[in-house]
Image (tube, rainbow, N blue to C red; front, side, top):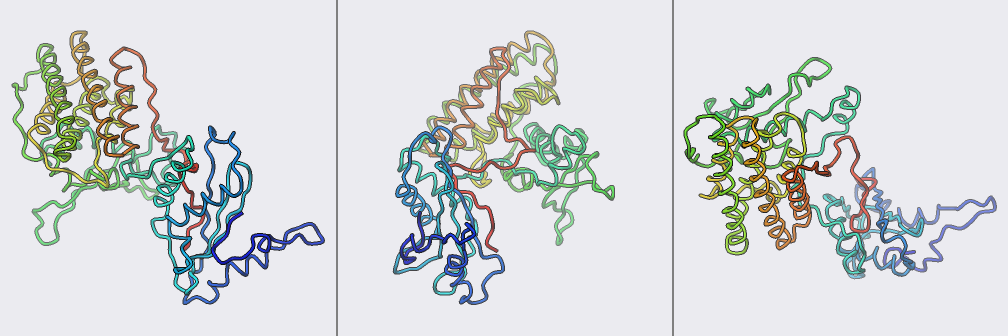
Amino acid sequence: MAAWDGAGSLTDLEPKVTASGKRDFRALTALLEQPVRAGYQPPNKFVWHASMRLAPEDRRRTISDATWASMVEQMLTEVGIATTVTDPGLRWIAMRHADDHVHIVATLVREDGRTNWMRNDYPRCVKATYNVARRYNLHRRVPPADRTAHRRPHPVEVSKVRRTGRAQTPRDELRRRVRTAVAAAASEEEFFAKLRDAGVLVRLRRSSTDPRQITGYAVALPGARTAGGQPVYFGGGRLAPDMTLPKLRLRWGTPTPLPVAPTVGRTERIEAMRQAATVATAAADDIRRDARTDPGRAQATAVAAADLLTSLAYAMEGDRRGPLHRAAEVFDRAARDLYGRVHRSTSRSQEMRAMSRLVALMGRISGNDDAIAALALVMDLARLADTLEQLRRAQQRLHQADAARTAAKALRLVAGGRRPVVTLPLTAAPRPAPTVGGGRRAARGR
């Protein structure tokens, strides 16, 4: 239904039906591979394959071959496969397999003999198909990737979790414990101490020129070991893009002294929750004010709010991975900056982080009065999540806006005493194939 510019008639490209009733693909294959055979040191794997599929809510629509061809050409042009007559690109064809999807095949050697390696093609395909879905007014529009999601576990990790019957992969469990320690610490020494107290194995990386200087860290669970019995360590950057030691140092900044003495009791817990609620309300106002004038300050405040929610989840649920913990994970993605960037701390973010440390210092919530004050803080954080959603939508960061909205809904359900439903990426499930709104690469051209 579509092919590269200069391919001639689509009817001529259609594989002929032989006497046996089968298709003869040799002529089409020879045309597609012609630049590969004439190219300079062509790659061994030169076939690129993708599909475009309608979402379930769009499948009732009747889309003609001409419309499909136009959508495919627009997507491939934006990705860099289909180019103009003056700049010949790759040879490709698009086949309609059913009413709801098409398949695209290209060979990765250009007409001039150069190889197009199609590096980083998946996010470019997602962005291109999102633009196509918007132009054709399709219902499902998967926003472009923003690199704010957690690092996905390796398939080997997922298989091992299934075999051993664990609830989470070691990577996910370590990320949760590290996030809790980050939220409760004010310096790297305190951070490493809290990790060890939580039963995490910590390995420090020291500078090759100055052994006294720590340049990084890696963590492992005592029960997660290789076949040879060695612990499986993960560096901070392999857990989340903003968990490397240099970024954590920038995030902590200069610690703010705690506003109250470290006395732990019912009265102190209630007062700590009230102080944190006051700061959370002020932080939401700051995010609204700084959204346009100083987005860096708003970003630092949002990250500090995620720390406060993490500490509160631990105070209310402990190590149990309950609804508040899941809401904190979703909020953490909404608060994270693009590509793992970290902004310098501000006075408001330091105040928020001091509240996070204070809530962690107060320990587990046990009484009714404590719980009432904590639920009031949950509701204030839900309002802050609403503000964060508005900020992300204004920034056109739609994945994070959806995460903020999901977190706000979950927090309101917790505050109302009902169990929320928070949808998180399943670590044991493969990455879903995108719809129109996401091109899928099936074979890497390398």
